[in-house]
Image 1 (cartoon, rainbow, N blue to C red):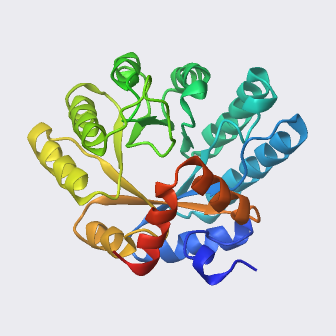
Image 2 (image 1 turned 135 degrees about the horizontal axis):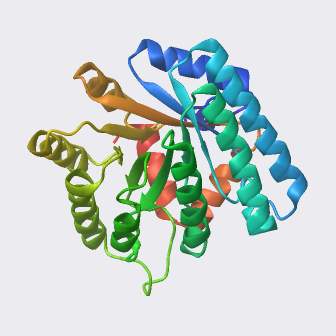
Amino acid sequence: MIPPIASRFVAGETAAGALDHARRMNDEGVAVILNLLGEHYDERAPADEDTAAYVSLVEDIASTGIDACVSVKPSQIGLDAGDHVFEENYRRIAEAADDHGVFLWCDMEDHETTDVTLDAFEELAREFDGGMGLCVQANLKRTPDDLERLADVPGKIRLVKGAYDEPAAVAHKQKSAVNEAYKELLAYLFREYDGGIAVGSHDPEMIAYARDLGAEYDRDYEVQMLMGVREDAQRELAADGVEVWQYAPYGDKWFSYFYRRVRERKENALFALRAVVGV
C-alpha cells in the first residue's frame, strides 16, 4: 500500500487505479498525463516490460474514452541499455499511440540524454505528423538552439524550468536566471512555434505570463502541473477556461521515485514538503 503522503503524488499502484484517478480529475475539468514509474534500467528486459505496459495503457485509454495521455522517460524504455533499445521501444509506443489516437509525451532527463532524445522525437514526430510532444528545460543553456530546431516540428512542446542538478557549464544555476530564461523561451514559443504549447510550471508568475502571451499572440496553450501540487489552482484554472493537464505517475516503484528525486536535487524534498502543507 502506498503511504498517505506518497499517495498524494502517486495515482495508485496499477493502471486501473491510475485510470480511476484520471476519471475523477476529468470530472473536475482536468485532463491527466499518466506516467508509469520506472527509470534507469541497465538491461533491456525491464525496459521492454514497461514498454509493453505503456502499449496496454494506450489501448485502455482509447477504449475507455478518458481524457488522458501518456508520458515516457527515455531511461525507462531502454536508453541506458543502448540508444537502439530506446529508439525501438519509443517507436513501438508511438505506433500504438498513433493507431489509437492517444497523445504521447516524452520527458527530458539530464543533459547527457538531450541529443538522443531530440533526435528520436524529431524523427517520429515528423513521421507521424504530430500526436507527440517533447519536454524541454529552461535551465539548460542550449535550449534556445533546441527550440529553433524544433520550430517546424509538428506536435507540442512542454516547457519546464528543469529539476536536475546540472553543472554550471551547461545550465543556469541561479533561480532568477532560470526564471528569465523560462520567460524568454515561453515568449519564443508563442511567437515562433507552429505546434502546441504546454506551460509546465506551478509558478503563478509564469502561468500569468502565459496568459498574457496567449492574449497577445492569440494562441491557445495548456498548463501542466504535477499531481499533488497546487491542485486547487489546477481546478481554478480549469474552471476559468484554461486547458489543464495533471502529470500523474503511478506504479509500485513509488519509493525509488521519491528517493531518486531527492538525490537528484535537494530542493525537490522541500518542494514536496511545501506541496503537502499547502504553501
